[in-house]
Length: 138
Image 1 (cartoon, helix red, strand yellow):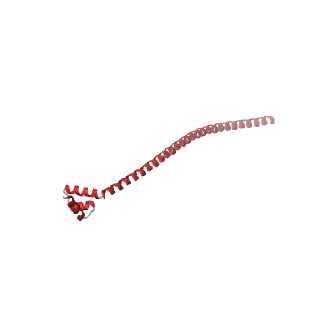
Image 2 (image 1 turned 45 degrees about the vertical axis):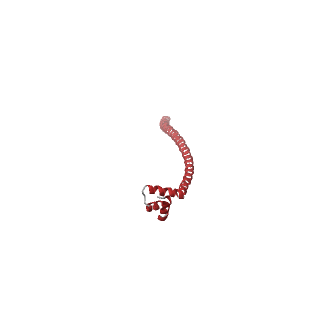
Image 3 (image 1 turned 120 degrees about the vertical axis):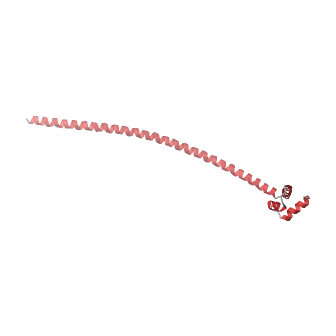
């Protein structure tokens, strides 16, 4: 009878161990599926990170290209500014020349403008405008 009890006890322990082994196996399977899902997510994350890195590289590259183009345009703008300033200076010099002022006054007088209006528009005094008109015989 004692051997029967020992045999029964051992059988119960074996069944308990078998049940624990089955539970352990199920948990192992669940852990394996979770690990597989994490690996897939990690691969997806790595692909997205790689794609983001490529996009960032393209953005930086296009930004550098735009910066270079802006620097070129700035240089061209500076050159044009200098050219325009030279032209403005020439125009000021020509507009203050006595011959040009004489032509402006005579042309304005022919159009019927008064000596006072011509003096204001040319920056000369009224007497100077009168003198130019008298010399021209107008």
